Length: 161
Image 1 (cartoon, rainbow, N blue to C red):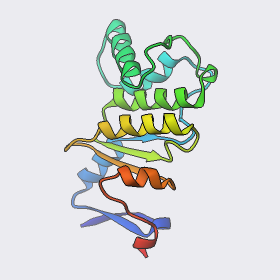
Image 2 (image 1 turned 90 degrees about the vertical axis):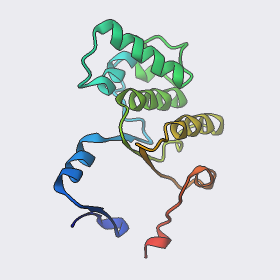
Image 3 (image 1 turned 120 degrees about the vertical axis):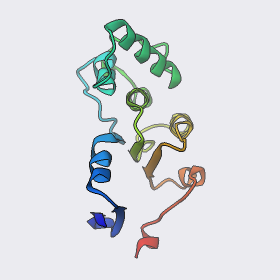
Image 4 (image 1 turned 45 degrees about the horizontal axis):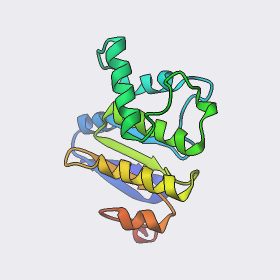
């Protein structure tokens, strides 16, 4: 049995086969506190990154992008708008739309609500948690007790000692 260690946190994920580790490496997606978007590019150009590997025509890509923006409450935004023109909450929702387009089985969210206002934070969490299903694992790192209450399971650093 192989182990993947996150040294700082003294925790391990047990991997039975190397193929499982490869799957994890390929299929994980991140939702970052600082959005992880390319600031001087358009919404469309950023969302295309969530469609990499999907064989879609340009019109199919645009349709999926618009549907993802609608899902995160941004249907009013033009795909040609640049990221630096957006508010923090809009930027985080574009980042979440990119995650939705990728449709990964494993999402790592690092403080996804730390840089935005409370109302938008609530919306982000509702959307993120609506992505839960039996075939998807969502791990959220946060200092926010309100978010802890939304989780199915909470692991604290103290519990790992």
